[in-house]
Length: 239
Image 1 (cartoon, rainbow, N blue to C red):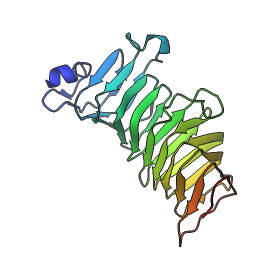
Image 2: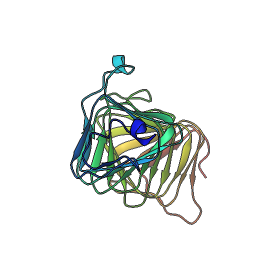
Image 3: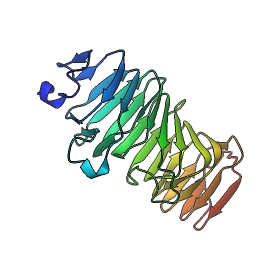
């Protein structure tokens, strides 16, 4: 039932056991293990936690487990950092609200949807395709007016799509395994590296003029579109 599905949310003011939604106005400081068994909406000024310990992921290290094919929608009005683990390799997280959610822990989900506001992928300071704490099997979908930003090192994902904004930060690289299709603005001094598949760029503007696209497969510029990119280095085809 709902009470069992959302037991970790039940103690938070504003939790509705009938719908599974949390509509509190304060910060939600998640601890221990939260099991999300149904689609739920968490409305908060900020989702936060202590830093997870990878050696105790089967214990009480802070983490949110999302059941397969379910969606956790976070409507966040303020800025916060969630340092726990988001897990559910067949499930989605939908970030809404005007606030900024920084994710500095393990993120192993199917799709991160950024509908509103900003999500910052805060890495571990490492470089290369194995850096960062995000799953390289994940899709990031950035809707118009939403922002996806890299900080503290490189990150790897599976697919990128959407028409919002990407901020690569200072010298960070976004590694994309299978490509995708993106229409929007890219800022920051960084690079995008494509491992395989096809990356379709529709009128992409590199605002700072420092975007490098390095493709191990095909990079396509849509017919009739205009993209402003500093450097394109493609091992496969550039169409």
